Length: 247
Image 1 (cartoon, rainbow, N blue to C red):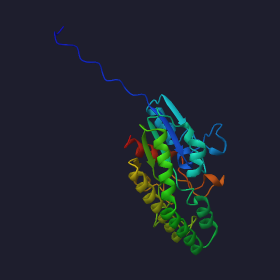
Image 2 (image 1 turned 60 degrees about the horizontal axis):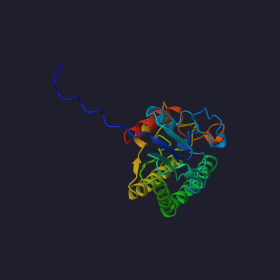
Image 3 (image 1 turned 30 degrees about the vertical axis):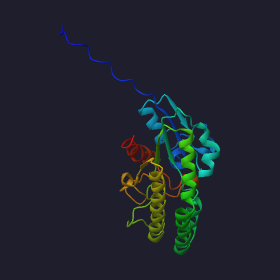
Image 4 (image 1 turned 90 degrees about the horizontal axis):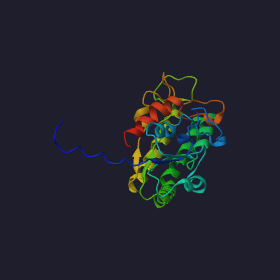
């Protein structure tokens, strides 16, 4: 019954219009439940789906696709972006640097062959990938000029050192972790240069990499394209909390 002025109404909330771009780490390969997404393997348990549900997104474009390169994103995914898009996430660059070929070489070849292939990938990441990322990031900003753009990183695959006799040799594991570090270094630098938000995920996977007691990443598996990817826990307990710290 007080005589004070009524409290002002809360400020209007901006509806979330979210588009998830990128490769298999964003589509949720290895997390299962792919619906009718075909070879793109968009999982119902992928972090974009989980985030969109928690934030009650008014619009959600889930177009990330297994195997996608920067060129694929430009050709088949960017058309989903609008001027009204408020949030964009993307993981990209690993396939440009030859992720599948690197993993195949390191799985079937010698330690030296693995090391040599990783060095080729690292050189590509440092010399060729920056230009591709710059171009793609500019296209994203042009299409969605007011969106918060979040570039999501990649985790190291393996615990090193670790007793892991059924897995790749420790020298191979160490080289693959090196490759992941270089890829993240390059992706982060290009995201920062564009003033996009970079989300690191490495610390979330510490203690949960392959060769740990509770891995959030798949080892060599069948189907083979689901090898070396975040599993359901990796998406829900690794990627999602890392993303939520930034948006």
